Length: 146
Ligand code: CA2
Image (cartoon, rainbow, N blue to C red):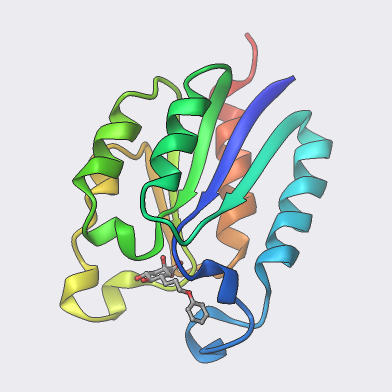
């Protein structure tokens, strides 16, 4: 089975508990459930992770190098700060789709430049938590056999 990592950066564990006007009402558990359901339909195996530790997504990306076909990542605030995250993603060979729940370009100027976008094969922003399942569908298309 094709293995896909879905990675979430700092504070995304708070999804659905605060700032619903920006991030909506869905919790990260809901997102994991929806991704799991779709992955089953598409024949993908998932590793779904979130951490508030800035180094942790880097370690997961290194792990993904050993057998994963693609990565969906919402790097949260690391998007705008982490060259280390960009370097880790650049060492991964498969497709990378960057997801943001809110549209960063409607927000403060510091959210307008993403280091991760310099490596991502696609970027989804402002489509709410639906962005995650759309990203999985894209990974499916990009990694389908034949
Ligand atoms: O829109 C997104 O998905 C973001 O990646 C979320 C990040 C933010 O820094 C990016 O600019 C855009 C913030 C994640 C924190 O999520 C919270 C959710 C609910 C309550 C508080 C924080």
